[in-house]
Image 1 (cartoon, rainbow, N blue to C red):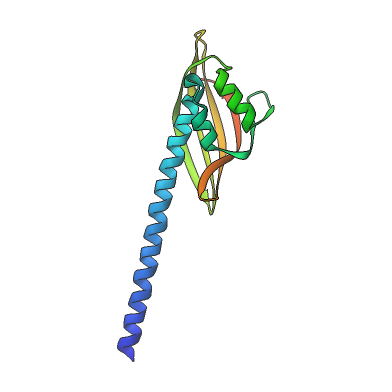
Image 2: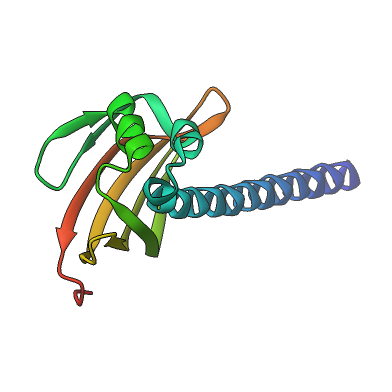
Length: 150
């Protein structure tokens, strides 16, 4: 009887360890996906890459721009298609991701340069949700920040 309990206890521990490892591995993969997607979105306007934005943003996405205006996914796609900001380059400087079950919050900063030579820095917070088998942004808020801020 003791031997059977020992075997069962060992099996339970092995299974628990395997589940914990799988969750950690999956979380690391998801974090890498989110960080890469944030980098691609930062560069999307200069490249007029609407396919990336289409994939990253959920259909019910709502963002807040640096002027405090709300915008929807369709408006972001139009802005990227036209490169409304006249961006020549957008680069992510840092991204920090925290998980809350089927949600993640990504906070970071990016630098940008426009064709007219103007350059600057944004800091932002994006809320990611896992649903229908994919991670997408449902909410975003951008702030214009001094270039030398930390």
